[in-house]
Image 1 (tube, rainbow, N blue to C red):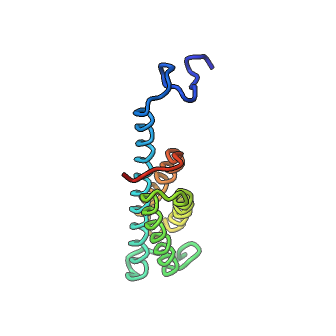
Image 2 (cartoon, one colour):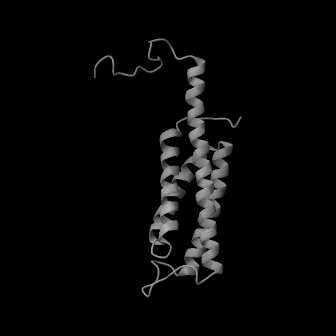
Image 3 (tube, rainbow, N blue to C red):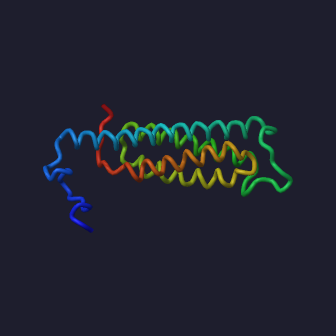
Length: 154
């Protein structure tokens, strides 16, 4: 690498140490992405809760072919979506509160939920694709922008 392309830790572009304003802006961006991840986690969780309730309460809403659904019947998928959705909403709220454990749980839940939505795809294609996209956004936001060890709400 040339000297111009190397990033030197602890210095800004001019060679001077980063100002407190620069650090505050960088920290604010990371916190903003974590808030974004929290909001998307809550939104995806609410979609899951609705999917689960619909599966449990309206048996004729989802179109299930003669081969059935993968792994579970419609009631099983309803309970799975309801439980995962509730956990996702609670994890998203914990992300807002700054809980460190919520980052790991958010990534794990989003990954599991994306796989579950993929298996449920034959019954509800458009909704599942939307939730999978939201899960990918959550994983990206938490992993790429969640490097701040502590952050505050206000």
